[in-house]
Image 1 (tube, rainbow, N blue to C red):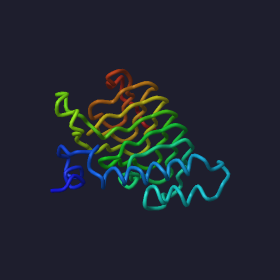
Image 2 (spheres, rainbow, N blue to C red):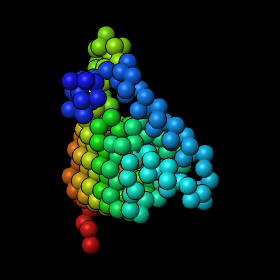
Image 3 (tube, one colour):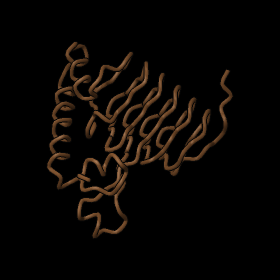
Image 4 (cartoon, rainbow, N blue to C red):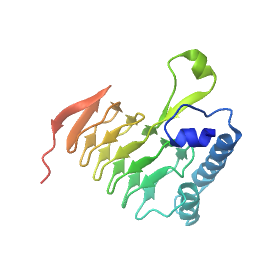
Length: 186
């Protein structure tokens, strides 16, 4: 297996020294830089977003600045809103459902690093997918960690760090985040 295949399989891989992965990240970084230099009213933004993601999302509102590692591993549902200063670390898939609102300065982090610094210093990491259900709302400065699934209809309070799976229709808050209460959807 090459390093990209290991990354896609959720195995330990060398993210820092594999030239193919480094090059793919540079392409995405350049595209994000290009997007972030365009005026909000510039119609070219949609073309650059399509280049970053590899498809044209339906009803997306994406405010700059925005940063991703690869771009192609981000799957956005219909009518997603992404506020300013968001980072999608998409070594694995980040799958966002329909009608999701993401507040400013949120991070979706699929990369995990070894606790052992000898292995970490070798550049090893593991990418685990993140999945977000429909109709979720993320307050400002929320961090979602590798391998987390967030159910439908959740509200994640500002500043939360989501480290484990969360059930549908939950108010989630804290560091680490926990379910505060169930939300009755009307």
